[in-house]
Length: 398
Image (cartoon, rainbow, N blue to C red; front, side, top):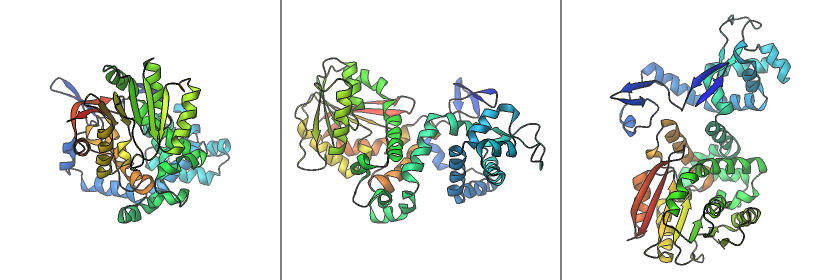
């Protein structure tokens, strides 16, 4: 993918330091589990990385401020010519002091750079241009979704991470009110900005794999699919558009099925999308019997391993010997790129302090084992679906 930054074109697919080895294009940004066995960083570089962690709250807020005040956008608009502090101050109505401290930090973070003709120490001859990292913050969808999700959902609650780990509860969720035990119960009542960031994050990561998942699911010609954790009905609607005969049933909490029902009606599929409202962990919630297929998309990562086994035992009771059970998840140890694995590792902390206090983004083996404990066996595993490298796991009853 070519992108324009500071008047130049850079070739990027998240790869840096590309080299050719043994006839294959290799890349240091590819994810390799073996990297965790090595500690080859120089001491001076390790010290710098440690300072980035020490000042992380301040550096994050500096970038948030530059985004929200338009400073970073104005630097992008200036192109290769660059822009001075005074010009930025005039355009954004931010004091030169404010522009200065923000831009100096952004320089230290490599978010912005200096133009080639800049003169050190001269405010009028020192001009800022956008760096590659700055371009990612402004234009890259993965980065934007993660950034605003962290800001609107996670940032305040993350101060309760230690308490969440010690108590086994999402103590950070209390920033949105103290009557919720999980974020899923609170979704329909979140502030609009937070709600948008949550759903943008959720849909960005799951929807992008749907085009590749649909042919796999419908190769088996299912007529009935139970969509557990159907959320806003995105998958069920996609199925109805893909296949004119399939009937869907969404299983989710009351607040979510209400939203899903409206979306299904707006899409014209009220007759083909039904609903089973309830908490899937509750003994009172019964799943529809004998479906051709059961679908769970980025749903099981909302539960602990023991809860996953409990849910799948309920699925086992409802399924037939011929029912296919599809689990779509981004498994962090099955990612193509280190960037994606890192993002998923960080997302686990959101589950700890905001979502529920006991789940995470799982590794391949631990998720498969938890499902198999419920009486299933893995039939097929499709890895690297979509640009976010999802895994589609297909199970049947033993």
